[in-house]
Amino acid sequence: MASVMVMAGSAAGALLAPWLRALAFRLSVPSGEPDRIRCPSCTRELVSDRLWRSLLPPTGRCRGCRRRIGPPAGVVEGVAAALLGAVAGAIGPRPELLAFTFLALVAVPLVFIDIAVHRLPDRLTLPAYPILAGLLIVAALAGGEPHRIVGVLTGGLVAGVGYLVLVLIRPDQLGLGDAKLAGLLGLALGWWGLSAVVLACALPFVLSGILGLALLVTRRASLDSALPLGPFLVLGAFAVLLGTA
Ligand SMILES: [Zn+2]
Image 1 (cartoon, rainbow, N blue to C red):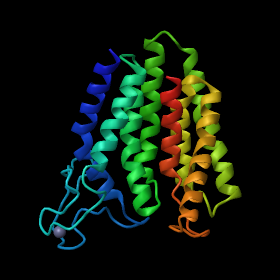
Image 2: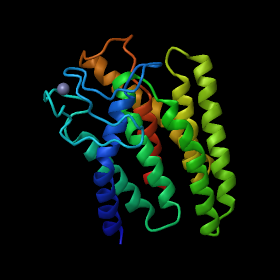
Image 3: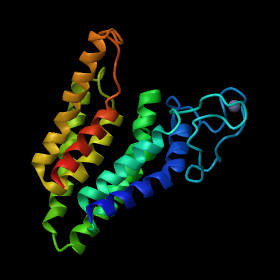
């Protein structure tokens, strides 16, 4: 059963990847700038001006001038297929699978946007809150486990407020976008209780610390180069999710 779920999840990830790639491309702009819908080199229009109605092929290149645009070929597609496959395999055919699949679909473009421009746009994170909370609450009721609703709401609150405090203490290292993403991931991890939330909140610092040290040792970064935290938040949350589910 698990292998069928992994295959189905991977197929869904691969199928939705052109849409995730287009979202990552258009929202990889500095704060306050309009969406990117044209190729930066030849100005050819590459995605629709409607946020939710754009697709980009896995080549990662402009259709006109063939210059690289966005993440390298196949990377968004590979990450989406692997993540959705892993989530489907770990959770199985249960009511909460829809909620965790939705979270993975939001997380993939956020990771690529944060790597590109060190931002986690509100336009993705904020609308995801009510949708994720709604899907988790419906799943808890449908699965006859209403106690999980308290865990979900507590998890979102603890992770969001916890990171907000860290942003206030270290505004040079964390941004409000990180706190908003942490709250969203906290909702999901709260499904398994507070210890999963706390572990998922701590892991990003361990992971980014290890990578930062490796980059320092190999002289690919200096002490003042900042790593985006978003990808580590997502990595930590899904590591705990896959280990706990
Ligand atoms: Zn072009």
